[in-house]
Image 1 (tube, rainbow, N blue to C red):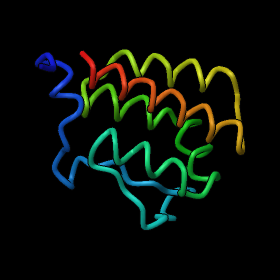
Image 2 (image 1 turned 180 degrees about the vertical axis):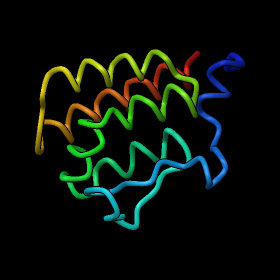
Image 3 (image 1 turned 90 degrees about the vertical axis):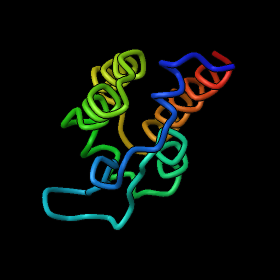
Length: 108
């Protein structure tokens, strides 16, 4: 049985609180994620420019911290931002961090 905090983080959020991927201000990619699992899936397919844009602005960190209430993953995103990753290394590290976190939450 998952603990309550893990279940809250894993639960899908309403569409208005979903993460919407942009490549720049006003340039929506047409992709959004309403749960951590969906977010992980979208990392693999969204334009890498969108990942760079959001990481630079700390949008991923804010979303997982404020909307999903996951301070632990937010801290990992902060480290990624400080590492100045771009392109495919960034996509890969984001995917690894989110999938690792999902695995931990699912086994909590």
